[in-house]
Length: 596
Image (cartoon, rainbow, N blue to C red):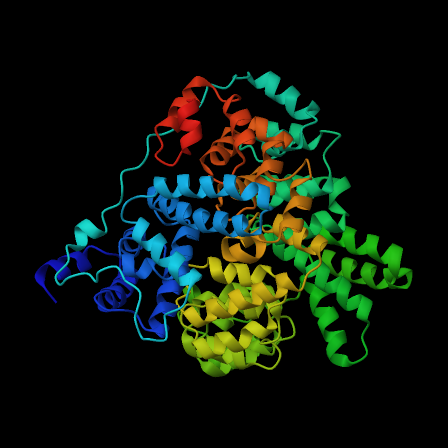
């Protein structure tokens, strides 16, 4: 290793140093099939803009379509480089649509392809030519190979290769009308626009949130969207404190699953759900009965209203049981708070016998978490079989456990099949790849696979590849309505991981875009992606949300596949400052540049 390479390596973060060594080792030679697979995985999952810039400046890697597409779809790729690569992706998308277009449209489509090719940067034109030849014909039987970009020389200048391109000038936004506080409060109580009401629910000011909660047009769906995006703990408590939301199952589920929900509130709701589910199943054996008693002993006083409400509707004969445990709660608890000695007074640690007793009999969350972290393996093993231990408690403790204990939980007969525990284990930084692949079979639905692909700490490429295959299989097996629901619930994240499958499914996209209440973030993703069909781009250009979001209009104008008539119409909607900003972009199509 040269001195310059060593200095550059020291400038990288520790996780990126391993990836850089792999890239530097493979770069001077033609990659093998397994190396192409590795490079594709890095192109899609790397979060370092410098390393992604290095990959994008290696032409013989870009000659492999999966690597180029991965770099174009990775949101961590620098903006200027990503847009250049997206133009290559758009070029082949237009070529494919040109082949499928009617005969009378082929000439116009061909001219559009030529104009787009002329806009490519000089270093990307040979890459586009090579990719086109690979699609048009295979290597001849004579053994004559196709031309390849030259391989890089020895001792490259890593600093120059990884230097990030200059950021484009910031777009000047027109000044918005500023409302005073009284007008904002009145607007929060009376607005009929869902997006505006959602903004008030997410506001950091307490009075605005409370005013928005009194808006008569607020619905369960809108409230669940706000809960999923909010990071203000007081907002969750405000929703929980209102009687009209307290008893609704959909809102309680939204509270419990929201990422920003306080841990204590989430635990209270989860305990009630587990208790209600256990009461519905009944108690066919003593173990089930002990679990119900354990859940009742952990139930908070405020949740007895919900359990009583459920019992009145579903099982009136259980009301006496609920009253018994509520009366018991009001009396002084005879729990196990004194099971561990006070170390400050007695000056000693708890004995092994006391810790074993606590591991098998504890019902309080802080006691169970304490025994799960006990240094003695016997205590940890017994705590896993405690009937009061819930999946949420165990999942919250797993990240702090070492590899041995994480592997023990993964091999536990009861806990390895729990979806929440299995998902937390898969994200454990020290879990082996084989164990993570085995646990993935217990993760239902699309969300766990998306979270695996999103996690930058997860270093197992095979786990991410398996998650991508699972995501692809589940999506292709869905009906159109289910695909639309999945795209909306993921916020368009499926487009990032399954660009080919989602963006070539024109029927699903057209039906989704026809919804006038569609999330603007999804429209923005569709407008900027160069694989989006022309018909869908034309449909977006007439969507009512477009008028309120200049970013969507800009992305439509920068997308070479947007129909010319739609582009001209949108261009007339922009202000002069926005038009001048777009004219400075090298990616603006030539017809619009002439018009400007």
